[in-house]
Image 1 (spheres, rainbow, N blue to C red):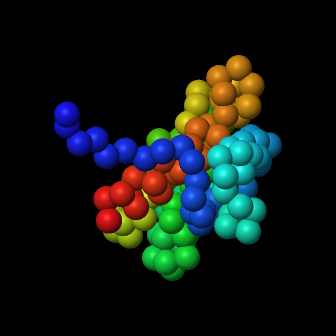
Image 2 (cartoon, helix red, strand yellow):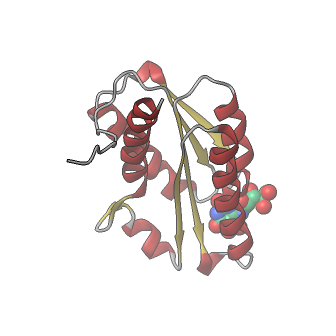
Image 3 (cartoon, rainbow, N blue to C red):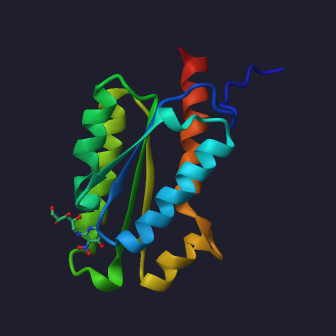
Length: 155
Ligand code: INI
């Protein structure tokens, strides 16, 4: 039998930072609520969850990097929403957010989870913020829990 190393979806004292963009707040707050609910229902404690707000998705990377480097968190969950229909510079904002978050995770060694919706329309964003296509924040929280457990196993 091969040895399989994988994370479980059960929190054991993980410390989480949620970094949420204010832009498209109507959507992003649903992602925050979904993420917090999922963390709590998988065993995380309120006291181990911090929420940090930034202006927009473009600013997520630098703040996630700062939090990851602090040593205070086992995973960082970045939450935002970039809508093409309403954004002439969609590609720049969404692209730089993705690059910044990937760089923050790679440089710090702390899992930085990409919970940013990138959609064509506000309708698609609503569908992914707690209606018929699930909740991207809840999905991101599950990824964070899994990664925290996996990183411990890889130590
Ligand atoms: N930020 C977002 O998070 N989503 C968007 O759709 C968006 N639009 O439409 O432009 C957006 N812009 C702001 C950007 O993230 C920065 O906060 C701003 O450019 C200041 O650096």
